[in-house]
Image (cartoon, rainbow, N blue to C red; front, side):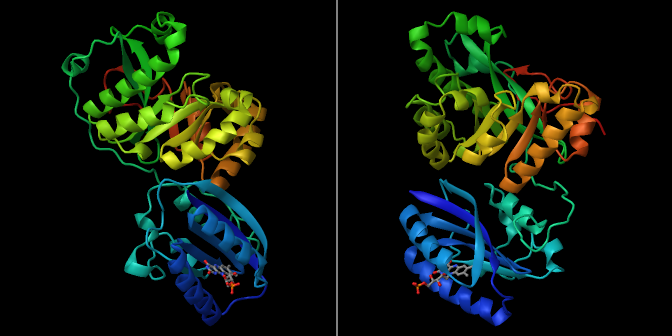
Length: 405
Ligand SMILES: Cc1cc2nc3c(=O)[nH]c(=O)nc-3n(C[C@H](O)[C@H](O)[C@H](O)COP(=O)(O)O)c2cc1C
């Protein structure tokens, strides 16, 4: 299994450029033999390293690195299975970053083999963690700094085509269909994703459809309906992410969930990493032991994972200590009237800081008015969903939405 391990540490003494180069030369040679890739950064006495490769090889290398007297105070930031490497063929890219370089590190390329640069990373959380390192997170030496939440969005959008009679053209006999609600990136002013919401063929509410499903066939229905959502979205020209829900109780234990999504994605030419699976926080907590055993499968599938209604299940930061999703969707009860509620503000600020440090995106959902939006935006949240911006649109990937200036 392919894993990625990211840690930081403190150098035992200041490294000269020659010493760093020596270390790097050795690491590159050794890592090439073991098919290990990654990057090593050094700034003002702190190391930050990404290692990726087969699990056993990473673990045995890390054991050695851990014992190396040239550094101490190791902190593992992320350790998770991955579908593909972020650093491709780089046996160990490295940057010796001076304080002056910090402002420009994202985008420089003089330290990377093959002349590639950070600017080319769009996928995964590595770029965000590098940005966090740039702003002083994970560095022992620098503690006081401001955090501009300056994170790039993963996929930019082209205008999807709209066809008015989608279901007809797809020639399906299903009794249900989907509406799509945009999730917008306020920074780029583009659609980041569409959440697929179950509807009747004539836009009837989801509950009506669910009530008509035989309870013993709910798992099958769940898989089938998600495949239809992927099919519809692809047909409508999806070029952003697509958020899909998993029915409670199916999310964690059903062995067919991931394979059926991957099959549909392949069939309809959607990349797995375009798909964001939303799992309710309450579901995860209820079945945490089972969930823990399913995490690997989720992470190595390449699909992105979002915790839905985060903040409603009362696990909060404890959950993030155990497992780091790609995205959390803030529960709308935390969002409601946030501009005038001190405790909600304090909780959201804490979450933002934790998520920034862990490379987790935050979506504020259920935003209904401009005061809520402005407060959240001022705190650095980029991703928004709610009636203020756009309502769900039946069988359409709408590209028009409202965004206050
Ligand atoms: C910050 C830091 C990062 C390192 N990264 C690597 C690496 O990526 N690959 C590697 O082979 N050694 C790396 N090393 C060196 C190892 O700690 C260790 O010295 C090396 O694997 C030699 O071990 P051995 O002689 O017992 O085989 C690193 C050392 C430090 C201090």
